[in-house]
Image (cartoon, rainbow, N blue to C red; front, side):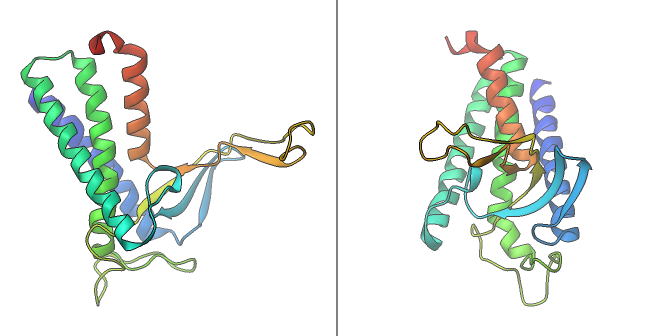
Length: 199
């Protein structure tokens, strides 16, 4: 029973993540933005060629190495969840790891398949699904779709801070997606509420 519930949770999380990403990619031009709540929540479409917060390894081989690393990590995490199910681990632990697994897999789907399935996103027009002539990149060379932007507040660094004093800053500047949220929530939940399990 636990296996079915965990599998359904992972499938549901993945479905929501992919539906949102596909809709954004086929309805928004690059850097197009829609205000959800003025001044602090926007839907803003960007594409991330690398890992979290735009980190990337240089060139085509760097992208391939990053994608292979993700696949290996997902395989290991999937095996570990299977092991936890056999050991009848607490439900909270299974949910936490399922969130992390679904988030990681959601972003890998983008990297693995979006380059094959979509045309290039541009600043003037949304991408199209299954374009004539093929997609914008090969297998494992696609870009991750990001859209959640929460610029909570702007300010100015105090003048006494060396190097950056007097410069303006924005908190929180990263643009991310639902899959990133799943990973963050899963990790924080495990650290805050499931520490006993790791002892």
